[in-house]
Length: 206
Length: 206
Image 1 (cartoon, chains in turn cyan, yellow):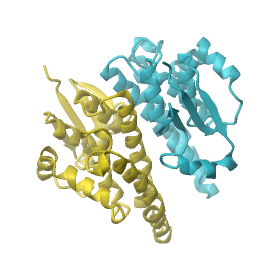
Image 2 (image 1 turned 180 degrees about the vertical axis):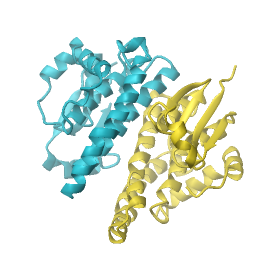
Image 3 (image 1 turned 180 degrees about the horizontal axis):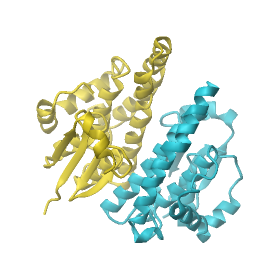
């Protein structure tokens, strides 16, 4: 029997969107709970670590967006087919996190001059270096015209697609110099179930 | 035939130690390759994303410390016995990241006053908040007398064990107010295979 899923997060794509994308690809029903920012103080103590998102599976809570994504990914065949493939998928997911983390830190930097310097370094060095590594990795698999790992869509591709959108909130056109990555992003966004979700999901800033 | 493992990292615990603990717990042979700081610029270009640790498995590279840890844990039966247990283990491993993120900014902070402020927040708010939840998880499982998830040692236990040293780089006495976690740490340290590794491993500051 299908488990009862409740996904709890703010009304953003943010750290819950990866789970929502897995549900969309797997065509699995879930309750997409989006609470208001002002309700968070009440909800926070009910979560495992005072953070969101939380996935409830038949009432049992699971925290940490990546743990949630990997759990659902494994349940629905998007985690990678062998242990080695799962590890490669993991590596891509964690690398996308490394790409996004400094951008968030820059966003919260209070000193305007320092913020501008950090942003410049990020846009001109940090981000391109990571993207180069990702494009090289992608090209090592079917010439870069398929997916990151194996021959089918995995969490690696979904994470890449979603996190690129998050980076884009801060850095315009991040994939301009990386044609294979750009093509992968479009390929994933145009998959019917994903396109349908993108069309239907609430429109939020991030 | 057993795969040939080579772990490439600095001569320190840092992000390499979790893999080393897994090899120790599983009693699996590997090459513990520790390069010198001055050799890093040469090695960097050979890594998938310009970062270490890298695990080579029969010559194939895997980057990202947690991807490496999860891969080895799965290979060695230390990842959790069910899909749900694996997700709980994952959740704890991810939480260690969140708990450890403040360490480097504190370490790098040059302004003494700012550094003191950040340290205070870390020691008195951030870290204890998480530690309390981790302790609750431990206590809810076999009354805190065993492991974090399930009835046998998993990656979650080793991740917490390794991370405590990391938190201590920026916070004095991370387990001071958490007696069950202190007992847990001692318990893991005295597991024969772990104790043997702790005895034999190179003594490094970090």
